[in-house]
Length: 366
Image (cartoon, rainbow, N blue to C red; front, side):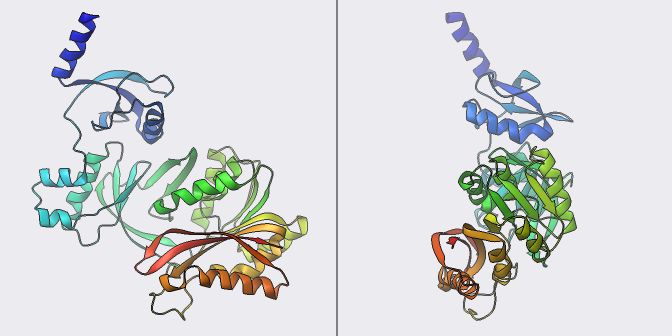
C-alpha cells in the first residue's frame, strides 16, 4: 500500500495525470458522460492526442464511458477562464473588460458574440485553448430574414462549421453558418421533452432542425414537424434519423398553414408548438409595432388543436408588455374561433435583445 502511495506521489510530482483518448467527434458526448460518472478532471485542459483524437483528463479510469485507451497525460493545469488566457497573451485589464463574457460550445464549434472586443482572432485562439475539444470559433453577428439565417464569421480554428451537438441526450446535426441554434433555449428544449406524454399527437409548426421535435419524439410523442427552410429541413430529416425517431416524426417541407387542413382532417393535435418569432423585434418604446410572427398563425394553430389541447406560443416581447401582449393575442384569436383559453404557465426564456424578452405562453384551449 505504501508503494502505491509513493507511486501516486511520484506521478503528481512529475505532472502525470490520467486521460482517456476519444475520437474528436465524440469528445463532447464523452465529457458529458465523464462528468456524469464523476471522473472528469476539470482542472486540466482537453488536448489534441492525434489528428483525429483528443485526450480528456480524468481522475480515474471510467467504468461507463466509451474510450479508445487510457494514457498518461503530461501538462500544465488548465487556465480556468478566458481572462486567464487573454492575460497570458498580454491583454490589459481594460482590454479584458471588453472581451466576451459568455459563449457556447456546440459540438466542435464555439459560438461567441464578439461585440466591441479588440483583436477577435486572439479571442478565438484563446477560446480554442480553453476548450480543447473545439475546432472552430464562430463570431455571431446576428440573425435575419424569414428563415432566421445567421450571419457568422470564422475567427479561429479550421473553419468547419458543421457539427453534432448533444444536449440532454438529444443529438443535433447542424451547420452553424447556415441555420440558427440558440444556446439560451436549452432549458426550454429539455422541458418540452419532459412535459410531453407518450403517444401524444403533436404539431410542431416551425420545426427548424428539430429543436423541440426531437426531445418530444424521444419521449414517445408522434410529431408532425413542418419547416419551409430547405437547409433547416435537410438537417431536420438527418436529425430524425440520427436520434432514431423516424417512426414517430413526420416531416413536411412546407408552410405550416398549408399542412394544417390535411393534418386536422386526420385528427387534431393534443399539443401544438409555435416556436417561431420574427428576428427583428422592435425597441421597447415602440410597442405599437408588431414584434413577432407567431400570432399571425394562431388561427391555423387553433384549427389544428383538439379541444382541451395545449398550445405553446413563443414571442419576442418588449419588456413593458411581458406577458400581457402574447396572452391578449392568444385570447383574442381563441375568442374569434369561439374557444376559451386557460393560461397554464408563462416563462421568460432569455433576453432576446436590449429591452426585448423571448417569452413562452402555455395555454389549454377548450
